[in-house]
Length: 171
Image (cartoon, rainbow, N blue to C red; front, top):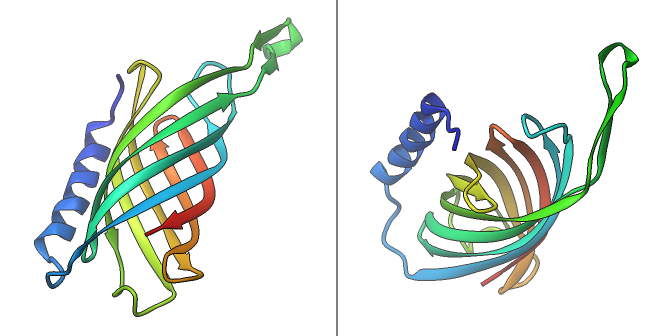
């Protein structure tokens, strides 16, 4: 499992800073999401893209959240020409599971506004622990009613994927 120590320190510092200035005490609530999207892939064989779909659950107290998510990650078939045109290499399509544990910080008071931006940090694992990744994400929940909304998110699962996701969020 490859994890960049400096980036890990940055994520832990960001979580620590958000915890050091807690919001006033609020009742706990639970958020659920279903989302999917496309990802740019690097440093993983000769693959350069993936599709993700999954769901998450998060316990939110005031502005802070702690949650987990499970994804299915599909890597399409990939073919590349070797340097100098000396041949080609091909990698078949495959899929694997992904599990993430993350902490989130939500900006602004809810339900005061219709939109609520957030940042997240955590750890992700693909497959049976073959690839460990640090998660840094940001996005916005746009509440369309009292209990449902739309989630837009950009996430870097360092060092492997940069993903763009959208989906539904529920209370």
